[in-house]
Image 1 (cartoon, rainbow, N blue to C red):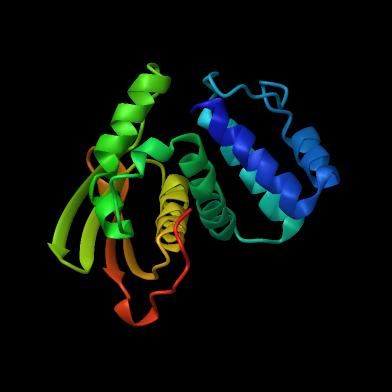
Image 2: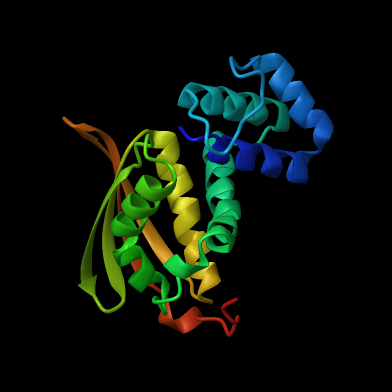
Length: 190
């Protein structure tokens, strides 16, 4: 796992729970990295999982909620870092329909050693999309948060139906995303 994700989560933890909570969690977890993460560094994803679990215990916030919140928090950061990837898409479903290509291209360009999650999409109608995310379950929660963050970016609301899958190739999540046309907001894109 690239350090940028862990560093961004620690930033969120500090913003939401304070520096004392960050210190408490990192002292308890004692990550092999010492709790110092560089954006280009590669770290064992178990460090992030341990940080998340400790934060959940101390904050009393369910683990899935922390992961979804992180996804929603991280989406604007991702846009700010890579605005060129989003310029040619005018809706959340249009972007998400091309997300596998965007993830693969960006990961290979910036982090050649990264192993990004596998994402497969199938547009089922003008207002719905099936998305399959292959990776650890906790990343499925992050993916759901990213989906909601994407919809918010475009001033839309997406209804998400989700199922956990245990495929022979590894764990995954199936999402059915449906654009809620009745609740589209007038929020302007940045």
